[in-house]
Structure formats: C-alpha cells, structure tokens
Image 1 (cartoon, rainbow, N blue to C red):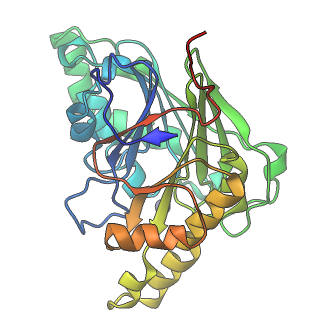
Image 2: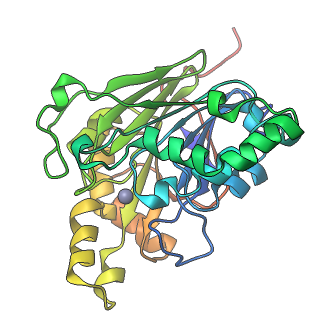
Amino acid sequence: MTDRVAPDAPLDQARGLHVVTLGTAAGPAIRSECPGIATAIVVDGRFYLVDFGLGVTRAAHTAGLRGENLKACFVTHLHSDHVAEIPAYLLWNWGRPVQGFTEPVQILGPGPADPSSGTVGTAGLVEHVLQAYSYDIDVRMVDEGRPSLYELVQVEEIELPASAAGADGEHTPQMDPFMVYQDEFVRVSAILVEHPPIFPAFAFRFDTAYGSVVVSGDTTESLNTSTLAEGADLLVHEAVNLDFYRARDFAPEFLNHQEISHTTPAGVGRVATRAGAARVVLSHLAGVATDAEWTAGVATEYAGPVSVARPGEVYTVVPAEAPATSPA
Ligand SMILES: [Zn+2]
C-alpha cells in the first residue's frame, strides 16, 4: 500500500520510506511548469537521488532535502534531460555553508557506450564538470574552508554482468537484476532497459526495511522492468502520449524515437501487471495529457492504483506484505 499523503515530520526527520517526485517532465523541452525528471528515495531521513533533470536543485531544497543527508546518486542514462543539472546540484549542495554534504557521495551511472569512440560515460561527465568549475571550487575550498569537492564526489560506472552480453543500443537481453550499491539503509539493484539508441540505460530498484521502490528510467515496454519490479511496493514508470506528438509537426525520426524508446500508458500497465507491483506512479511524462487520460491507459492493463506524479509530491511507502498490527 502506498498513499500520497505527506509524512507528519519534515522529510529529513521522517521515519520510513518516502519517494519524492521532484521533477516529472521528459526531454530537453519545456512543455509545462514541471521541472525535469528527478526522483528522491528517502529512508529514515537519508536520501538517494535518481537523475538530475532541470530544476532538481531547487526542487530538492523545496522538498526539505539537504545535501548533508544525501547518501548516493544514480543516473539511469546519459540523455541530457537526466543529467543536465549535475553541475548546479553538486555546487549548491556541497559543504557546511549550504547544509551540504561533507562526507563522500557516490554517483553511480552508465559507462561510455563505446569507449573507442571517445564519448564519455558518467565518470568523464562528472570529471569534466568539476574541471569546468574548478576556479569556483578551488576558491571556495580556500576562501570558505569547504572540503575538496573533487574528493567528496566519487563516481562509479556500473559494470555490466555477463548476462548482459550482446546488449547494445538495439538489443537488450532478458536478464536478472544485479546489485550495484548497498549501505545500512538500502540495497540497490539495476537492470538494463531498452531505450534505443541509448546504451546503457538502467532501471533501479531500492529495497529497504520499509518496502521497495523501482524507478524505470527511460525505456520502452520491457520485460526486464517487470523482472526488476517483481512484487515492488511502488513502481515509478515513465510514459509517453504518442497522440500528442502525432498530432504535431514533428520529424519522422523524432516520432520514431518516441514510439520505440518510450512506453505507452497501456504498456506501463502490462509491465506493472507482469511484475505484480502494488502501485504505479507515472513520472517522466512525454507529451501532454490530462491525468484521466494518462491513468485510463494504464488501467486498461493493470488493476492496481495509478497516480500521475506532481512535482514535489511525497509518496509514503508501506510494504504490501506488512502484517497488520493488532493488540496482543
Ligand atoms: Zn532518455
């Protein structure tokens, strides 16, 4: 069971598992007031970020999330709308003057699709960001006594398991989830999803003492997402409204990308039903539709509760299998 009500304590003091849909918009395109895609997983006041869409820095602050409680960050893939605000987020959440992080923070994300091509993965991206802002960083380390941002930010490119052999931007084998991160609050596993031509593209699952959450990342309807989300208490899944794009003057290549790389609401419903997920929240909404239109599509294939994420909305997750507490 999951409800939409806010926790009764500020997020940094709230016990349990909460998910904040900080930003809900898809693409490097401003089609609404909504910030770009970013999701926070909050466990007993500590939090994890999935993706850095445009606006995440302010959205996280507004939600009451401060860098000092950040444990780790996860990048689903390297499309700009998922990583554009890495620079501002790091620079605005670093050191005591801004209640920022003063302990190492890991950023986990894809490696380069093809190292021989010279394009960078998550490590190269972050390294270049820090280099680009090195004048400011160096000054603040001396002038304000901040710790070294270069040392605090630790990037780990996610290594693909043997079961991912043969995967590329066109083909993604069915596979088992694999563990990418663990600490005292969460166990995070990943799986490859299908978002051609982007490779690698990951979905992430957070297992906690209070239940489980899966964030799909960008993907077409994928069996792997269902595998990862098996029995999840909350599935945060992307969705596309193809009719929105078809009714407008977009190039055939752009329309083709929407069709083969994103998931229709009915497709989300099939993924959730195969997974047996207890609840679905749609976020990373590509194209415009009413809430009723988004949820009706999911409901054609899925009988559970479906919500359309609002920016800054807090979902309190309670495990579906939690025994009812009753007096002895
Ligand atoms: Zn994408």
